[in-house]
Length: 117
Length: 110
Image (cartoon, helix red, strand yellow):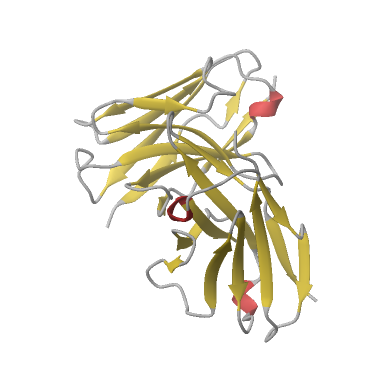
């Protein structure tokens, strides 16, 4: 059974770049699937950030598209997220997810990223 | 862009009662593109229902989903103490791929 684990700095300065990784275990990252990042600001709802498929093709939330890059490293079994020019509004718990359809059955536990000086 | 509006914002019920949660789409959504999640404090969301009415593996049969036009409903028959949580609906749209969530319904113990 696939397991996901997010990691990265818990504190990022305003105007900096948020960088997170998601380690994948228990499954091949090359199987036919998609991998998405979803975030949740404190006490708020869920927001899809973007996805990447096993071929490296990406789709991003239009509201974040200019700042987001999602990549995949099959050899390391790792998913990455970069979000540039962050502000306090980007403070959130960031989740990586694995899916093969139109919903998200598998989630990592999430990691809190705070944007503050 | 399709907007999902969930109601009520908060639902206060007692164990054993029936909960009815609504998710209304601003335009037509294919039933197989609509999903429900449960989220408890400090945890990642858990997939409950996909394709509007299909329970995910391991989800008790007191959870059911239905659709009428652009109105999607999650029903929990006979609330158990562990059911009190926040519930989100989510839809998928193609070309380009995008996923949007409703704002959530908090189900709390009365």
